[in-house]
Length: 272
Figure 1 (tube, one colour):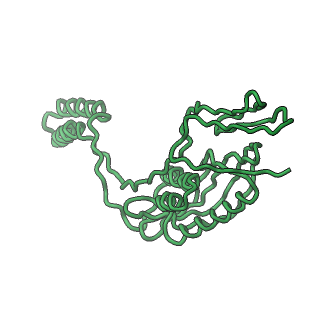
Figure 2 (cartoon, helix red, strand yellow):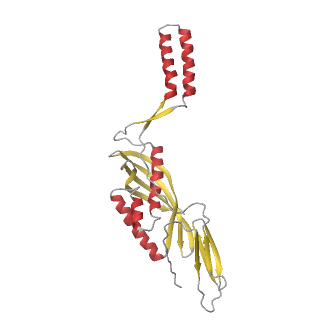
Figure 3 (cartoon, one colour):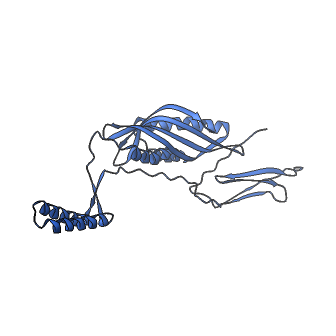
């Protein structure tokens, strides 16, 4: 038998799709399967009911969203409401040390310290500090950054128009890596088209981040372990696949946006 895959591009997610099968004389029925990102349904078409219809009942819009990851400068939290009682407490403590009504001064200082503690959670002011060259974020912050940047690479490839893929990819990757990743994707896409398979990434999860090191200028690199899970559809059959990657990823600020500048893969394995 011969398998044929026909692809129609739409600017947005369709609300209703219908396919009508023209039966040849003598054909009683044919099996048909409709698959979307959340379900699969099989029916039998016949000359009396030759139309396969799909209505959009998806809980989430499958159109990928690619957004930039802004560089957040380090902040100093200033407890503005606590400054007055803290200052007053310091004045009373100094007065007590100078033996000026020590009993009253120490009691007043305790009251002011309690007031400062109660007011501490209120009225905090975040003051942005200038980023220091050669510094690197902590592992928790690095993991948050990577958890936002890495999925954007895979979301960019959900678009089929080359210009759209390149534009979205440039929001997360820069430099020579941008061209390398894009060309690698083109090779994979050509193989998919020859084999009739269509892959869709559904989840990217950063599992572990370690060995965070500063990287010029004002960037950083980290040893990262992440998984990529998605579905592979091949002539009506859908399978879930998950791969695990271990790599050192380098990032740097570009117009106040975190972008990947290098990926050195140490290990890649299929988990499911």
